[in-house]
Image (cartoon, rainbow, N blue to C red; front, side, top):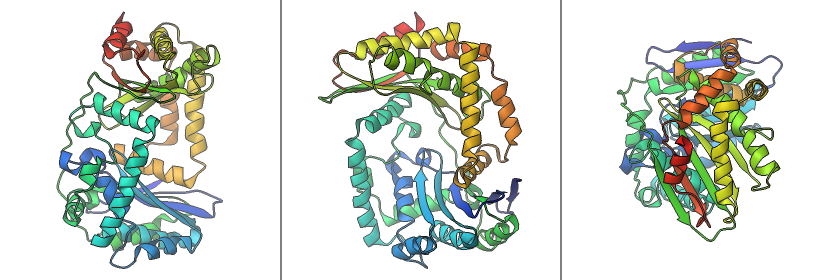
Length: 420
């Protein structure tokens, strides 16, 4: 198996990785534009555009798009994140060219039919309503907002309903014109694929496109902020965020290993202390997310209103203790979890295509797997302890709490406890 990576003269990038013995392939186009690339007035339009891609092109109706892939037993989908929008399909090896044709068609030739816009507007408003009815969705949006206030990084992917209600066909077309230039597109494929075939298809379909203009992102600025909403729910949903490295920083490997050791599994500190020993919650975890220029280590737990104070106190104690006595066994286990997750994921062509696109978007190359594993293995106990200490030493934190939270700590309480 070998990765091949080429760039067309107009900046369109193609990356593939054949996987021996597979009868299927995953192929898609990743656009390096997402929620973060919107203006405030556009908030939610990248996600709206993702929906509209499946609602008809100059060559296919919405039904024909679905039938083209499903008639051959395939699967097609898309997603929007803060920095990327992706359109991808999984098909058998004989249908790779078909999948490429459908994906390229929906990216290049959407018609934005006014009737379909209105139908999909209603679908997205229902999606927003569903998210607002899901406390552990809402609280993460609030955490992002208070961690990155008054900036694109802090806005929701779905956007507020009042913005979605106002988007027009011209708004959608303008976002495509600004952000879907060939230098922002990455064609990634893995599994039963042939690089030369895909390059020919890419050149024929995308080679004529002209480069777009440069996009200047507003740098992300992490801030200490809080939002607590008292609501008569069964549980308090508690989230705490601490600034972490971006994914171009090698310290991201230390940050992710720390997150695994702190709350990444059943053997982690938070799971053992909060759930197993004290029975204060059903769900508790820590995770480290990253963007191009920043990141956030997030802790989430759901507990009763009576127990939120105790849960928060134990969580803060574990944050402080990690800087003092994180053990070699814990770090070794977290390294093993990270490597296993990476390597097991590579058994799926969909995961592999996703990884290739992500690495090209970050580095404009695909670092060898051995390079990544070596960076994981290089993280030692002292690195994790130092990271844990530096994570809490500024006292900067973001806090979002939702539910019967009358007994929940304030942000000032948490910050004082972190630096005490």
